[in-house]
Image 1 (cartoon, one colour):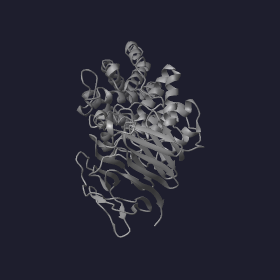
Image 2 (spheres, rainbow, N blue to C red; image 1 turned 180 degrees about the horizontal axis):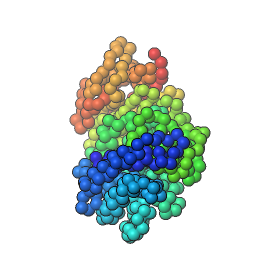
Image 3 (spheres, rainbow, N blue to C red; image 1 turned 90 degrees about the horizontal axis):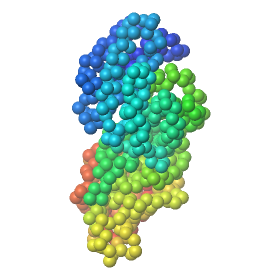
Image 4 (cartoon, rainbow, N blue to C red; image 1 turned 90 degrees about the vertical axis):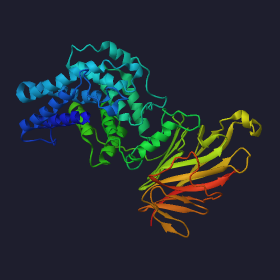
Length: 509
């Protein structure tokens, strides 16, 4: 990817800057000329592949015009900002900055052609334009910039950003809004970032990963379940151990502007959770440290003991030490849970019930330690005579208890012999144990728990579910997505259903 080349160039440049300025314990190199010559080669490559319109985007990002170019401009403008005062002292450095300037100036011409009303990352482009204007005063960006700044906000009432694409994380938006605040002095941008970062404090799991399978991009199709949610579940399975390190930089940046020990603690926790941090994240950390100096001490950490409901986002988050659980409204996946090494990736209910293939929590309420999901039918006129005064066909009640959750699933419409299954999707690698048997199932395998309790163990961390139920042997009901990356455990029923079960966690042999 061409963006990687821009990150490499910025990395070379920051290494040169820390060497020349001799910042404390910062890394340095003895041969700065060789370093700069390599940076110039990379810059020459970037100029060669730059299109006539100034953009460098690859076909992989055809649905997001200008995004690679925007990220490249953001990074390279930071080098121009810090590097120009040193240009008079080193001819090679001066030639290097000249190439960066050529690239940025041409790139801005392309970014100015992207319309704000169709752009899902307008704050990112706006910040890149403002950065470029700070180093090239003759750029005419005012009209386009105004269209971005006047566009509709991308935040809900709970200050979560609307994620048009699931691969865009909050660190991208936060970084861009903070840059806009730095250059334009618009307090609402800093306030929006602080609110969002506070919100994110309640999305972290104990291992530093963050919850992503929720959001306002969800749309239900005529089957009553959310395509976007299913896509999010599938897309994230390969990235469930992804730590959002970019947020660490946003936490530090925000804490410099408005001191907040929790933000500094979150930044430290995120950064320390990974041994490898990625070049782009290192570049942005260098930018913040060079701009603001040493960070404040970390006197607080990420919250780890709470039950918090976000009604506008349809999200109930529960943390108690290693236990981290997320419950979702309007999502075919009702629950995700982690406990140390143990995970439950999905919990969903499949039903051939009034034209709806999945149980979806259309109505999701939380009172104290109890959450209630209620699922509506799709053809109200067809079954109106069967209803008892409301529009719901089934419900799932979840109560938070010590060490896990007590659950009750029941149908509310009295029709017999409709097949239903409750599916638990565990990641591969666990040891499955019941009263009479123990095995290590493989990804894609389906197990039935007929009765009693059972455990899935990952090292010394255990998730216990049950009691099970088995009223039919249908393991792949029509319309149900397969789970090739997980081990699926089923409880099966025929209506009417009223089943109580638990999900508990513990650590031990």
